[in-house]
Amino acid sequence: MAKIQAIRGMNDILPEQSPVWQYVEDTVRKVLSQYGYQEIRMPVVEQTELFKRSIGEVTDIVEKEMYTFDDRNGDSLTLRPEGTAGCVRAAEQHGLLFNQTRRLWYTGPMFRHERPQKGRYRQFHQIGVECFGMAGPDIDAELLILTARLWQALGLAEHTRLEINSIGTAEARRSFRSALVEYLSDFVDELDDDSKRRLESNPLRILDSKNARTQEILQQAPALDDYLDDESKEHFQTLRSLLEAAGVQYTVNPRLVRGLDYYGKTVFEWITDSLGAQGTVCAGGRYDGLVEQLGGKPTVAVGFAMGLERLILLLETLDLIPESVNGDADVYVTAMGESTMATAFSVAESLRSALHGRVVISHCGGGSFKSQMKKADKSGARYAVILGENEVASGTVGLKPLRSNEDQRDIGMTELASVLKGMLA
Ligand code: HAM
Image (cartoon, rainbow, N blue to C red; front, side, top):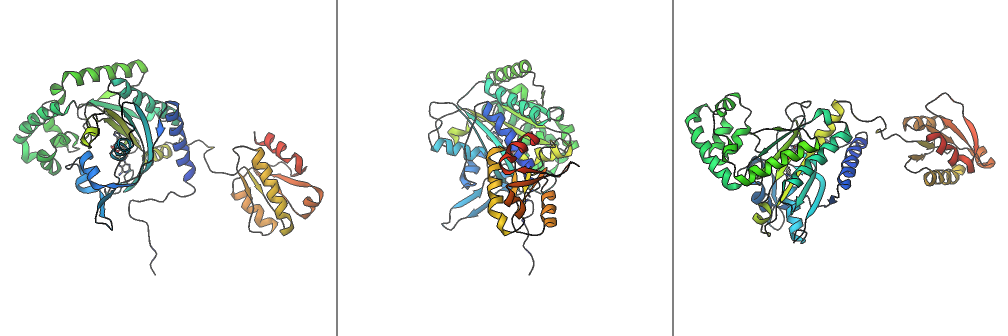
Protein backbone atom coordinates (compact mmCIF):
# COMPACT_ATOMS: atom_id res chain seq x y z
CA MET A 1 0.00 0.00 0.00
CA ALA A 2 1.24 3.51 -0.76
CA LYS A 3 2.44 5.37 2.31
CA ILE A 4 0.49 8.44 3.34
CA GLN A 5 2.51 11.64 3.22
CA ALA A 6 2.08 14.98 4.98
CA ILE A 7 0.07 17.63 3.17
CA ARG A 8 2.12 19.84 0.85
CA GLY A 9 3.30 22.98 2.61
CA MET A 10 2.66 21.49 6.07
CA ASN A 11 5.86 20.50 7.80
CA ASP A 12 6.77 18.08 10.54
CA ILE A 13 9.11 19.62 13.07
CA LEU A 14 11.48 16.76 13.84
CA PRO A 15 13.23 15.98 17.14
CA GLU A 16 16.52 17.37 15.80
CA GLN A 17 14.84 20.70 15.01
CA SER A 18 12.87 21.07 18.24
CA PRO A 19 15.72 22.52 20.32
CA VAL A 20 15.97 25.48 17.92
CA TRP A 21 12.22 26.04 18.04
CA GLN A 22 12.29 25.90 21.83
CA TYR A 23 15.22 28.30 21.92
CA VAL A 24 13.39 30.87 19.78
CA GLU A 25 10.08 30.42 21.61
CA ASP A 26 11.75 30.68 25.03
CA THR A 27 13.65 33.80 24.01
CA VAL A 28 10.48 35.51 22.76
CA ARG A 29 8.53 34.41 25.82
CA LYS A 30 11.18 35.86 28.14
CA VAL A 31 11.21 39.22 26.37
CA LEU A 32 7.39 39.40 26.35
CA SER A 33 7.14 38.63 30.03
CA GLN A 34 9.72 41.33 30.79
CA TYR A 35 7.27 43.82 29.29
CA GLY A 36 4.28 42.42 31.18
CA TYR A 37 2.51 40.69 28.28
CA GLN A 38 0.10 37.88 29.16
CA GLU A 39 -0.50 34.75 27.13
CA ILE A 40 -3.89 33.90 25.65
CA ARG A 41 -4.70 30.63 23.86
CA MET A 42 -7.44 30.54 21.26
CA PRO A 43 -8.91 27.65 19.24
CA VAL A 44 -7.38 26.87 15.86
CA VAL A 45 -10.82 26.85 14.22
CA GLU A 46 -13.30 29.73 14.21
CA GLN A 47 -16.47 30.62 12.37
CA THR A 48 -15.63 31.63 8.80
CA GLU A 49 -17.58 34.85 9.24
CA LEU A 50 -15.05 36.08 11.84
CA PHE A 51 -12.23 36.16 9.30
CA LYS A 52 -14.35 37.56 6.50
CA ARG A 53 -15.49 40.43 8.69
CA SER A 54 -12.05 41.26 10.08
CA ILE A 55 -9.43 40.50 7.43
CA GLY A 56 -11.76 41.73 4.67
CA GLU A 57 -13.74 40.04 1.88
CA VAL A 58 -11.50 41.29 -0.91
CA THR A 59 -8.11 40.35 0.50
CA ASP A 60 -5.89 37.55 -0.82
CA ILE A 61 -6.34 35.64 2.43
CA VAL A 62 -10.14 35.57 2.37
CA GLU A 63 -10.51 35.34 -1.41
CA LYS A 64 -8.18 32.46 -2.05
CA GLU A 65 -6.17 31.23 0.90
CA MET A 66 -8.51 30.07 3.65
CA TYR A 67 -9.06 26.44 4.61
CA THR A 68 -12.83 26.58 4.92
CA PHE A 69 -15.18 23.66 5.41
CA ASP A 70 -18.67 22.83 6.63
CA ASP A 71 -18.67 20.86 9.87
CA ARG A 72 -21.19 18.12 10.57
CA ASN A 73 -23.80 20.66 11.65
CA GLY A 74 -23.47 22.52 8.38
CA ASP A 75 -21.70 25.51 10.00
CA SER A 76 -18.97 27.11 7.91
CA LEU A 77 -15.70 26.93 9.85
CA THR A 78 -12.17 28.02 8.92
CA LEU A 79 -8.70 27.05 10.11
CA ARG A 80 -7.34 30.34 11.39
CA PRO A 81 -5.16 32.11 8.78
CA GLU A 82 -3.90 34.53 11.46
CA GLY A 83 -4.40 35.25 15.16
CA THR A 84 -5.68 38.81 15.48
CA ALA A 85 -9.31 38.05 14.64
CA GLY A 86 -9.55 35.16 17.11
CA CYS A 87 -7.76 37.15 19.79
CA VAL A 88 -10.23 40.05 19.45
CA ARG A 89 -13.13 37.59 19.45
CA ALA A 90 -11.86 35.86 22.61
CA ALA A 91 -10.96 39.07 24.46
CA GLU A 92 -14.36 40.58 23.69
CA GLN A 93 -16.29 37.41 24.49
CA HIS A 94 -14.69 37.14 27.93
CA GLY A 95 -14.98 40.80 28.83
CA LEU A 96 -11.22 41.42 28.83
CA LEU A 97 -11.54 44.75 27.08
CA PHE A 98 -14.11 46.54 29.18
CA ASN A 99 -12.63 49.73 30.68
CA GLN A 100 -9.13 48.34 30.80
CA THR A 101 -5.92 48.04 28.90
CA ARG A 102 -4.50 44.68 27.87
CA ARG A 103 -1.18 43.41 26.57
CA LEU A 104 -1.68 39.91 25.18
CA TRP A 105 0.35 37.39 23.21
CA TYR A 106 -0.31 34.02 21.63
CA THR A 107 1.47 31.41 19.59
CA GLY A 108 0.46 28.53 17.38
CA PRO A 109 -0.10 27.26 13.87
CA MET A 110 -1.85 29.35 11.21
CA PHE A 111 -3.14 28.06 7.88
CA ARG A 112 -3.10 29.67 4.44
CA HIS A 113 -3.44 27.94 1.10
CA GLU A 114 -0.54 29.79 -0.53
CA ARG A 115 1.93 28.43 -3.07
CA PRO A 116 4.59 26.79 -0.89
CA GLN A 117 8.18 27.96 -1.27
CA LYS A 118 11.12 28.71 0.99
CA GLY A 119 9.75 30.72 3.92
CA ARG A 120 6.14 30.29 2.82
CA TYR A 121 4.07 27.36 3.98
CA ARG A 122 0.45 26.31 4.26
CA GLN A 123 0.77 25.57 7.94
CA PHE A 124 3.14 28.00 9.61
CA HIS A 125 3.61 29.30 13.13
CA GLN A 126 3.29 32.79 14.50
CA ILE A 127 3.95 34.45 17.79
CA GLY A 128 1.53 37.35 17.88
CA VAL A 129 1.05 40.28 20.22
CA GLU A 130 -2.12 42.37 20.60
CA CYS A 131 -2.55 45.45 22.80
CA PHE A 132 -5.96 46.91 23.59
CA GLY A 133 -7.23 50.19 24.99
CA MET A 134 -4.17 52.40 24.37
CA ALA A 135 -4.75 55.07 21.76
CA GLY A 136 -1.45 56.92 21.65
CA PRO A 137 1.74 56.27 19.71
CA ASP A 138 3.52 55.26 22.93
CA ILE A 139 2.23 51.70 22.72
CA ASP A 140 3.13 51.51 19.00
CA ALA A 141 6.65 52.54 20.02
CA GLU A 142 6.74 50.00 22.85
CA LEU A 143 5.96 47.20 20.40
CA LEU A 144 8.83 48.24 18.16
CA ILE A 145 11.26 48.74 21.04
CA LEU A 146 10.30 45.29 22.31
CA THR A 147 10.90 43.69 18.91
CA ALA A 148 14.24 45.49 18.61
CA ARG A 149 15.22 43.98 21.97
CA LEU A 150 14.18 40.57 20.72
CA TRP A 151 16.38 40.86 17.61
CA GLN A 152 19.21 41.85 19.90
CA ALA A 153 18.62 38.77 22.08
CA LEU A 154 18.60 36.49 19.02
CA GLY A 155 21.64 38.13 17.44
CA LEU A 156 19.51 39.43 14.55
CA ALA A 157 19.77 43.17 15.15
CA GLU A 158 22.20 43.64 12.25
CA HIS A 159 20.13 41.51 9.93
CA THR A 160 16.68 43.07 10.21
CA ARG A 161 15.44 46.50 9.24
CA LEU A 162 12.24 48.28 10.17
CA GLU A 163 9.88 49.93 7.69
CA ILE A 164 7.01 52.01 9.00
CA ASN A 165 4.17 54.00 7.48
CA SER A 166 0.90 55.63 8.41
CA ILE A 167 -2.16 54.76 6.36
CA GLY A 168 -4.40 57.19 8.25
CA THR A 169 -8.07 56.92 9.09
CA ALA A 170 -10.62 55.09 6.97
CA GLU A 171 -11.84 58.44 5.69
CA ALA A 172 -8.36 59.56 4.64
CA ARG A 173 -7.85 56.27 2.83
CA ARG A 174 -11.16 56.68 1.04
CA SER A 175 -10.15 60.06 -0.43
CA PHE A 176 -6.73 58.74 -1.34
CA ARG A 177 -8.27 55.66 -2.90
CA SER A 178 -10.45 57.76 -5.24
CA ALA A 179 -7.46 59.85 -6.30
CA LEU A 180 -5.33 56.77 -6.86
CA VAL A 181 -8.00 55.00 -8.94
CA GLU A 182 -8.51 58.10 -11.02
CA TYR A 183 -4.79 58.39 -11.69
CA LEU A 184 -4.31 54.68 -12.45
CA SER A 185 -7.31 54.45 -14.76
CA ASP A 186 -5.19 56.20 -17.43
CA PHE A 187 -2.71 53.29 -17.27
CA VAL A 188 -5.05 50.29 -16.96
CA ASP A 189 -3.62 48.46 -19.97
CA GLU A 190 -0.09 48.72 -18.66
CA LEU A 191 -0.77 47.39 -15.17
CA ASP A 192 0.06 43.81 -14.19
CA ASP A 193 -2.90 41.42 -13.95
CA ASP A 194 -3.12 41.44 -10.16
CA SER A 195 -3.12 45.23 -10.10
CA LYS A 196 -5.80 45.40 -12.79
CA ARG A 197 -8.00 43.21 -10.64
CA ARG A 198 -7.21 45.21 -7.52
CA LEU A 199 -8.06 48.51 -9.21
CA GLU A 200 -11.70 47.69 -8.53
CA SER A 201 -11.49 45.56 -5.42
CA ASN A 202 -8.59 46.85 -3.31
CA PRO A 203 -6.61 49.59 -5.09
CA LEU A 204 -4.34 50.42 -2.14
CA ARG A 205 -2.76 47.00 -2.49
CA ILE A 206 -1.47 48.03 -5.92
CA LEU A 207 1.15 50.08 -4.07
CA ASP A 208 2.59 46.72 -2.92
CA SER A 209 2.98 45.38 -6.49
CA LYS A 210 6.36 43.86 -7.28
CA ASN A 211 5.88 44.51 -11.01
CA ALA A 212 8.48 46.92 -12.39
CA ARG A 213 6.20 48.73 -14.87
CA THR A 214 3.48 49.11 -12.23
CA GLN A 215 6.02 50.55 -9.82
CA GLU A 216 7.19 52.95 -12.54
CA ILE A 217 3.60 54.13 -13.10
CA LEU A 218 3.22 54.59 -9.35
CA GLN A 219 6.16 57.03 -9.27
CA GLN A 220 3.89 59.88 -10.33
CA ALA A 221 0.79 58.67 -8.49
CA PRO A 222 -0.82 60.70 -5.71
CA ALA A 223 0.86 60.04 -2.35
CA LEU A 224 -1.05 58.64 0.60
CA ASP A 225 0.87 61.00 2.82
CA ASP A 226 -0.85 64.02 1.23
CA TYR A 227 -4.25 62.66 2.22
CA LEU A 228 -3.48 61.89 5.83
CA ASP A 229 -5.66 63.49 8.48
CA ASP A 230 -3.98 65.70 11.09
CA GLU A 231 -4.44 63.26 13.93
CA SER A 232 -2.76 60.41 12.04
CA LYS A 233 0.06 62.73 11.02
CA GLU A 234 0.68 63.80 14.58
CA HIS A 235 0.45 60.23 15.85
CA PHE A 236 3.05 59.19 13.29
CA GLN A 237 5.35 62.11 14.08
CA THR A 238 5.33 61.28 17.79
CA LEU A 239 5.96 57.62 17.04
CA ARG A 240 8.95 58.62 14.93
CA SER A 241 10.44 60.76 17.66
CA LEU A 242 9.87 58.04 20.27
CA LEU A 243 11.70 55.53 18.07
CA GLU A 244 14.53 57.98 17.52
CA ALA A 245 14.83 58.68 21.24
CA ALA A 246 14.95 54.93 21.90
CA GLY A 247 17.59 54.38 19.23
CA VAL A 248 15.37 52.16 17.06
CA GLN A 249 16.32 52.76 13.44
CA TYR A 250 13.64 52.75 10.77
CA THR A 251 12.81 53.95 7.30
CA VAL A 252 9.46 55.37 6.26
CA ASN A 253 8.07 53.37 3.34
CA PRO A 254 5.17 55.36 1.89
CA ARG A 255 4.14 52.29 -0.16
CA LEU A 256 3.70 50.04 2.84
CA VAL A 257 -0.03 49.27 3.13
CA ARG A 258 -0.28 45.63 4.39
CA GLY A 259 -2.58 42.94 3.07
CA LEU A 260 -5.28 42.87 5.73
CA ASP A 261 -8.15 45.35 5.81
CA TYR A 262 -8.33 46.06 9.52
CA TYR A 263 -5.33 48.38 9.71
CA GLY A 264 -5.37 52.15 10.14
CA LYS A 265 -2.72 54.72 11.16
CA THR A 266 0.56 52.96 12.00
CA VAL A 267 1.69 49.94 9.97
CA PHE A 268 5.13 48.35 10.06
CA GLU A 269 7.25 45.44 8.87
CA TRP A 270 10.57 44.03 10.02
CA ILE A 271 12.38 42.77 6.95
CA THR A 272 15.54 40.78 6.36
CA ASP A 273 17.49 40.75 3.11
CA SER A 274 18.95 37.33 3.87
CA LEU A 275 15.94 35.17 3.01
CA GLY A 276 15.07 36.17 -0.54
CA ALA A 277 11.46 36.89 -1.47
CA GLN A 278 9.89 35.91 1.87
CA GLY A 279 11.88 38.41 3.90
CA THR A 280 9.21 39.83 6.21
CA VAL A 281 9.82 38.22 9.58
CA CYS A 282 7.43 40.33 11.65
CA ALA A 283 4.58 42.63 10.70
CA GLY A 284 1.67 44.50 12.16
CA GLY A 285 0.04 47.80 12.92
CA ARG A 286 -2.86 49.61 14.48
CA TYR A 287 -6.44 48.41 14.06
CA ASP A 288 -8.53 50.84 16.08
CA GLY A 289 -11.80 49.96 14.34
CA LEU A 290 -11.76 46.17 14.49
CA VAL A 291 -13.22 45.50 17.93
CA GLU A 292 -16.26 47.63 17.12
CA GLN A 293 -16.51 46.12 13.66
CA LEU A 294 -16.82 42.71 15.30
CA GLY A 295 -19.64 43.91 17.54
CA GLY A 296 -17.70 45.09 20.60
CA LYS A 297 -17.53 48.51 22.26
CA PRO A 298 -15.12 50.80 20.38
CA THR A 299 -11.66 49.77 21.59
CA VAL A 300 -8.39 50.88 20.05
CA ALA A 301 -5.75 48.25 19.37
CA VAL A 302 -2.34 47.58 17.90
CA GLY A 303 -0.31 44.41 17.39
CA PHE A 304 2.03 42.36 15.27
CA ALA A 305 2.90 38.77 14.46
CA MET A 306 6.20 37.16 13.60
CA GLY A 307 6.66 34.05 11.49
CA LEU A 308 8.62 31.42 13.40
CA GLU A 309 9.66 29.39 10.35
CA ARG A 310 11.20 32.51 8.82
CA LEU A 311 12.99 33.49 12.02
CA ILE A 312 14.43 29.99 12.38
CA LEU A 313 15.45 29.87 8.70
CA LEU A 314 17.18 33.19 9.21
CA LEU A 315 19.05 32.02 12.31
CA GLU A 316 20.13 28.88 10.46
CA THR A 317 21.16 30.76 7.32
CA LEU A 318 23.27 33.16 9.34
CA ASP A 319 24.63 30.42 11.60
CA LEU A 320 23.38 32.24 14.69
CA ILE A 321 22.13 29.33 16.76
CA PRO A 322 24.18 29.08 19.97
CA GLU A 323 26.16 25.85 20.27
CA SER A 324 24.41 25.00 23.51
CA VAL A 325 21.12 24.70 21.61
CA ASN A 326 21.55 21.10 20.48
CA GLY A 327 19.29 18.82 22.52
CA ASP A 328 22.30 16.87 23.82
CA ALA A 329 22.07 14.92 27.04
CA ASP A 330 24.44 15.64 29.93
CA VAL A 331 24.60 12.25 31.64
CA TYR A 332 23.77 8.73 30.42
CA VAL A 333 23.15 6.11 33.09
CA THR A 334 23.76 2.54 31.92
CA ALA A 335 22.48 -0.64 33.57
CA MET A 336 24.26 -3.91 32.82
CA GLY A 337 21.99 -6.78 33.73
CA GLU A 338 18.48 -7.01 35.12
CA SER A 339 19.56 -6.94 38.77
CA THR A 340 21.04 -3.44 38.32
CA MET A 341 17.90 -1.80 36.90
CA ALA A 342 16.35 -0.66 40.18
CA THR A 343 19.65 0.81 41.42
CA ALA A 344 20.21 2.52 38.04
CA PHE A 345 16.84 4.23 38.33
CA SER A 346 17.53 5.35 41.85
CA VAL A 347 20.96 6.75 40.82
CA ALA A 348 19.38 8.56 37.86
CA GLU A 349 16.58 10.00 40.00
CA SER A 350 19.05 11.33 42.56
CA LEU A 351 21.00 12.99 39.74
CA ARG A 352 17.85 14.63 38.37
CA SER A 353 17.06 15.96 41.84
CA ALA A 354 20.56 17.36 42.28
CA LEU A 355 21.40 18.58 38.75
CA HIS A 356 18.75 21.12 37.95
CA GLY A 357 18.28 21.81 34.26
CA ARG A 358 20.56 18.94 33.21
CA VAL A 359 19.44 16.09 31.00
CA VAL A 360 19.92 12.64 32.52
CA ILE A 361 19.00 9.68 30.31
CA SER A 362 18.40 6.25 31.82
CA HIS A 363 19.36 3.43 29.51
CA CYS A 364 16.37 1.19 28.84
CA GLY A 365 16.15 -1.88 26.67
CA GLY A 366 19.09 -3.95 27.88
CA GLY A 367 21.97 -4.92 25.59
CA SER A 368 25.68 -5.43 25.91
CA PHE A 369 28.16 -3.00 27.46
CA LYS A 370 29.30 -2.04 23.99
CA SER A 371 25.83 -1.28 22.66
CA GLN A 372 24.91 0.74 25.77
CA MET A 373 28.08 2.81 25.43
CA LYS A 374 27.26 3.41 21.77
CA LYS A 375 23.87 4.80 22.76
CA ALA A 376 25.49 6.89 25.50
CA ASP A 377 27.80 8.40 22.91
CA LYS A 378 24.97 9.07 20.46
CA SER A 379 22.95 10.88 23.13
CA GLY A 380 25.59 13.61 23.16
CA ALA A 381 26.11 13.11 26.92
CA ARG A 382 29.36 14.33 28.43
CA TYR A 383 29.44 11.54 31.02
CA ALA A 384 28.33 7.93 31.19
CA VAL A 385 27.55 6.41 34.56
CA ILE A 386 28.50 2.73 34.40
CA LEU A 387 26.57 0.40 36.61
CA GLY A 388 26.99 -3.37 36.65
CA GLU A 389 26.52 -6.05 39.29
CA ASN A 390 29.96 -5.38 40.84
CA GLU A 391 29.21 -1.69 41.22
CA VAL A 392 25.82 -2.38 42.83
CA ALA A 393 27.53 -4.74 45.28
CA SER A 394 30.18 -2.18 46.23
CA GLY A 395 27.91 0.87 46.24
CA THR A 396 29.98 2.61 43.57
CA VAL A 397 29.60 3.56 39.91
CA GLY A 398 32.08 4.03 37.08
CA LEU A 399 32.10 7.61 35.79
CA LYS A 400 33.33 7.77 32.22
CA PRO A 401 33.97 11.06 30.43
CA LEU A 402 32.72 10.70 26.85
CA ARG A 403 34.05 13.93 25.32
CA SER A 404 37.61 13.92 26.62
CA ASN A 405 40.48 11.50 27.03
CA GLU A 406 40.26 11.48 30.82
CA ASP A 407 40.17 8.06 32.42
CA GLN A 408 37.12 6.43 33.87
CA ARG A 409 37.05 6.45 37.64
CA ASP A 410 35.10 4.79 40.44
CA ILE A 411 32.96 6.98 42.65
CA GLY A 412 30.75 6.16 45.62
CA MET A 413 27.06 6.41 44.72
CA THR A 414 26.45 8.91 47.51
CA GLU A 415 29.10 11.32 46.15
CA LEU A 416 28.17 10.98 42.49
CA ALA A 417 25.73 13.89 42.32
CA SER A 418 28.05 16.44 43.88
CA VAL A 419 31.03 15.27 41.81
CA LEU A 420 29.02 15.53 38.58
CA LYS A 421 27.60 18.89 39.57
CA GLY A 422 31.14 20.24 39.80
CA MET A 423 32.25 18.62 36.55
CA LEU A 424 29.26 19.85 34.54
CA ALA A 425 29.47 23.40 35.85
P1 HAM B 1 0.74 38.89 8.29
O1 HAM B 1 1.59 39.92 7.68
O2 HAM B 1 -0.26 38.24 7.43
O3 HAM B 1 0.05 39.58 9.52
O4 HAM B 1 1.65 37.75 8.93
C1 HAM B 1 2.62 38.06 9.89
C2 HAM B 1 3.87 37.24 9.67
O5 HAM B 1 3.57 35.85 9.61
C3 HAM B 1 4.57 37.50 8.33
O6 HAM B 1 5.37 38.64 8.40
C4 HAM B 1 5.40 36.25 8.18
O7 HAM B 1 6.59 36.32 8.95
C5 HAM B 1 4.49 35.19 8.75
N1 HAM B 1 3.75 34.50 7.66
C6 HAM B 1 2.63 34.92 7.05
N2 HAM B 1 2.24 34.03 6.11
C7 HAM B 1 3.16 33.03 6.13
C8 HAM B 1 3.32 31.79 5.40
N3 HAM B 1 2.43 31.41 4.47
N4 HAM B 1 4.39 31.02 5.69
C9 HAM B 1 5.28 31.38 6.63
N5 HAM B 1 5.17 32.52 7.36
C10 HAM B 1 4.13 33.33 7.11
C11 HAM B 1 -0.83 38.95 10.38
O8 HAM B 1 -1.02 37.76 10.40
C12 HAM B 1 -1.45 39.89 11.38
N6 HAM B 1 -2.42 39.11 12.19
C13 HAM B 1 -0.39 40.52 12.25
C14 HAM B 1 -0.97 41.43 13.28
C15 HAM B 1 -1.20 41.15 14.59
N7 HAM B 1 -1.40 42.66 13.08
C16 HAM B 1 -1.88 43.18 14.19
N8 HAM B 1 -1.78 42.26 15.12
